[in-house]
Image (cartoon, rainbow, N blue to C red; front, side):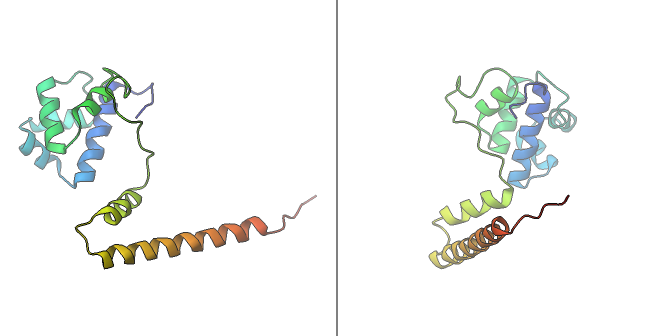
Length: 143
């Protein structure tokens, strides 16, 4: 979301779409929870509005559990440094984020977390061996 060529509305729309997907919510659920009109919300999410109403931004942020400072930054009213926010996290696939959440969730049984950790370690070790084998292959030159 740090692409300088992207309009504020598009950055804000991308933030809303990602948050909604992360929360597994429909647009209708966000509209109901936020109180913002359906057509208005859809325009925001499509990135067609560069200067949305502040009260609506706050309501949507609450509904989507977005830090309002993230919306302010997406809309171009400052930087992460201006609002004392850490740098953006790398865009990992959702599965990687989910694995991290499960491993950190003390509400899950230790056995379930250990099983996931074992599976992840096994997959990682398998990947490392595959990469090592690829790196050791002799290269052939064609003339």
